[in-house]
Each structure stands twice: as structure tokens, then as C-alpha cells.
Length: 148
Image (cartoon, rainbow, N blue to C red; front, side, top):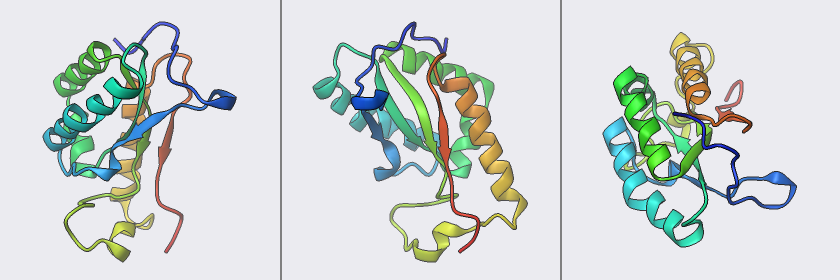
């Protein structure tokens, strides 16, 4: 399900993706993340790329990543991407937990790399990315720096 054939997506110079990053919307769990994709991402796609595959920069919290890792949930999302002619090429894994509606400041850096939960979360994001990124597209995961 992850192949869109040859990606003829919205691209900028130097083969860069024109993408919509979901970190601007709430998404503490997977249902909330998917709801923001349906409400906001698809509205933008309709305006800028209605007939071509559209890149998504997917922000996933630790909880959302665990929920999306469930095989049925992941398969359902892969079908959703295919149906809407969207694809994920990058995942924002910087904020581990809640990112909106609370004071984040230094909390966004926790847990840091001294905690095994950060490593497990980041590895899970790469596992998800491997299932979501279309063939022939380079993927990435953004995470926090080594220390704060």
C-alpha cells in the first residue's frame, strides 16, 4: 500500500518537497492527529495540490506513535494516505509528549537522550517511517539535539 507509483508530487527546486507539517495542530494521541490531518491537511492539499500527491510532515507524540504502530491502525492510515494521494516523507519526533495547550519551554526537551524512553520513541518513529515513506522517496525523522 505504500507505493504511489512514481511520485509526481509538488516539488520545489532541487527536488525538495512542498509539504504540510502537522506540528502546528494538536495531536497528543493518534485520533486527534488523524482528525487534524482530515480537517487541515486535506484542506490545504485541495488548494495547492488537488491532482498530485501531497507531502505530509507528520508530527507524532510518543502516545500517537505507539497507537499508530498497531498493525490495524497503521494499515488503515496507509489506506487513508493512498486514498487521499498523500505521503509521509518526514516525521517530527522532537516533542515527546504534549506540545499544544501547555507551557512547553524546557519540557519539550524531556525526556532527553539519557532516558531510554527517548531512544524507544525515536526508533519507533523510524520504524513507522519505513512503513510510510513511498519507494524512491528519502525520509527523515527530526528529533531533539543531544543535550539541553
